[in-house]
Image (cartoon, rainbow, N blue to C red):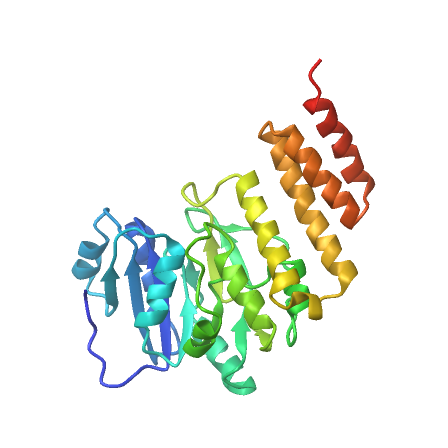
Length: 300
């Protein structure tokens, strides 16, 4: 473990989970150390890299705290980062993404303006493997009580978000059993009792490349649906989110899963999901795909 000497606890811990992204990580760290806000530490949890990440960090002389662990998945790495962090506030950056120079300063200012129970978050600019900007639709980010908005659309990401260490601990950290959606659950749970304040400017660049771009699978869509259902019915969402909005969102996720089930040659499963989608929220498009799924399930 590489330890950076600190005379006193920093105000911010910038937390970076990584796995075999040595070349991207260097660029990420350069963007971190270019921050206008200086009262921070950098904590890296290496989730079992075999590409020489540690040697790169030693060679470049970055002032970081580095911890290597056997590969356990991104959620386990994030939980370890929360555990190791010394800062009053925590923020994450993926090891292939980049921070704008003003990012930490903007997020800290938002929390200190609205109070330590606040979660500050922001949008991002998409980039490709070479760092070229990729055009994407920018949504207006809501502030305040965002439970219903967040249930309807994933506005909050692990990167570009900041809150106190205590808030992560309040909701039990990241679920290590889930391959996807673990951060989404954290933000949903926190939104029930805490204000989310949107920073106007995007604070990070989100990179898309061959190793993190994958076609959506039925299994992952099914997990997202189950996460949403559990939050709504069991974790308190039902008390806050309007019924029609919730049913429309759940119906939409069932529809998405069904379309992928058809693509993955599971027409019977698709039929079940499309029927469930129609019960929650009727759409002609859903009915059309139910007919398609039934035709594909019949054996002539």
